[in-house]
Length: 285
Image (cartoon, rainbow, N blue to C red; front, top):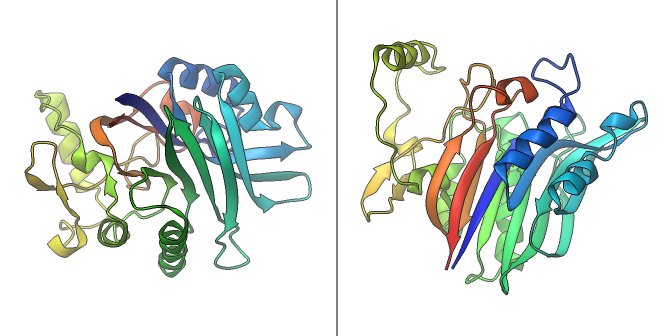
């Protein structure tokens, strides 16, 4: 059995939550302290000809974390480019970046890498989906088609990234067509934290929900918990990092048992990017 620590993070091109300063040095330290085994990154600059300190961010992080790297370039500008990256403590056997751009205004891709975990091939897909609902549906359809074509049914899969799916309408496609489950729906439930402060914060967040009423039941995902019981669980709020409101980031898995899953709120994370990172501990039999 292997226990794998997985982190998914939109790093905002190595700039702070407001974009006013560079955050890459602090980001290196924060990720080093997390000790990730697999790191799914979005908005990574592979090239920055303006500022050398922001250039080749996946390589810079990989060197500090002693991890192998794979980079998928999606958006190319005159002096910069950015895309998705996978960093791995395990050998990366192969990787390919697939263009899933839906229109000229947004360049999007999915980075598909195969890593070897103690002799087992694990398929890792890093995604950053578009801002428009119709485009996201077509991008997920391309993702589903790729997995059905290239990934054997008995090989484990991890899909993580920024899905921009704030109303959670894409989840049924992963569950029904691929048998993939979001890690927070399968993780052991945390014991509730009591106290007036937590109650006040909960009430305030509820008052700021984008929907005045909970989503209809059909839009939630019916998933199986670790104890064998079914529960309806929405992904956590991850954006904006300083006061999370929208549910944009996900980790989906197949072939693992979920030990734990949490969002990293507060310092230093709320200063490092506009997204909060996700971290999950998974068991591979």
